[in-house]
Image 1 (cartoon, one colour):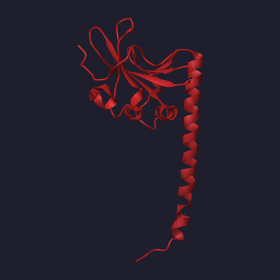
Image 2 (cartoon, rainbow, N blue to C red):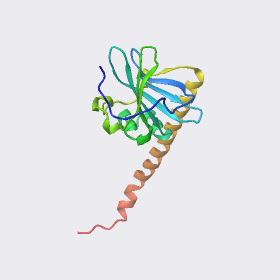
Image 3 (cartoon, rainbow, N blue to C red):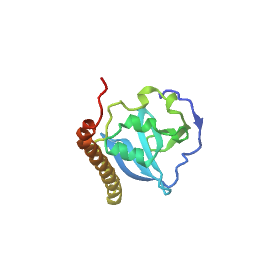
Image 4 (cartoon, rainbow, N blue to C red):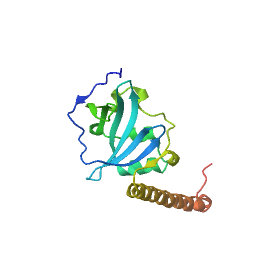
Length: 175
């Protein structure tokens, strides 16, 4: 039996026309799935518990920049989930056919700690499964853009560091 979690009961998830892009973590089944809706919203379904009848998923809406940071391995999955706004997190119990049996709007702080991933859960592309070519291209483009932005930041840091000796030469030392 799954533990009781406090939240507001909902008749349905407020996510319409969602499309599965990829299972970002797949190991003997989906553990983290990425969906998009028609309004270009980004949603993660994170498997957090199960019993003999149901699978329990934490469903969150994430901002694109935060998702990009996760995919670029700049933040962990736990850090990504903890950035979610209060109104954008849900707990979903699904039966063996994938049909929802319970939907709650929840606060992440009210969830059992083991419902959130470990601090060391980094994105690993080797565990991803893409569901169609378009989805794979979308995610790849997002990852490439994140890497390009990170490279630009790195170049800026390198420029600053390379000028550091000049700055220190002209800085008076107080004794």
